[in-house]
Image (tube, rainbow, N blue to C red; front, side):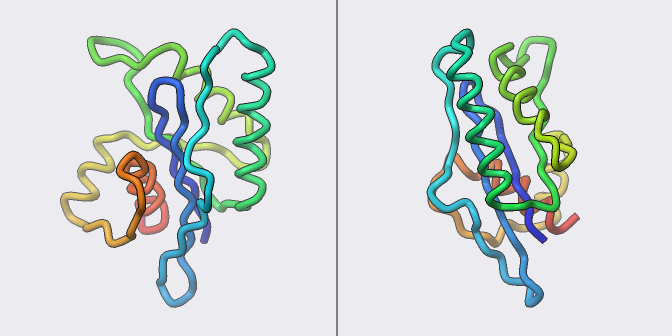
Length: 137
């Protein structure tokens, strides 16, 4: 099974693609693709490039599941409107439904389970945790 976990942080989408083979071994499919970032959300070309690039990444992996860590839309710790635009562009992927997983769900899961998949960059940790959760839920 192949999955992609995505964490949206301000102006970037951090992706981690993970596969578990028949022996239970985890394989990092992310390759050199770490995250996509947009500088100007009113630049139509940049928005189109973001959508094309992330959907091309999805197509290259052919995942069985894609999920985004949900964010708070209202209140003191609400996410930026910019990040919701990125979320919408990701959700436009027409080959697979994009699901949402709450941070609380991940926290509860990792209180009982450990993360045994190695990763290179600290900023990928939450996207990796989501991908690992998708494989093991």
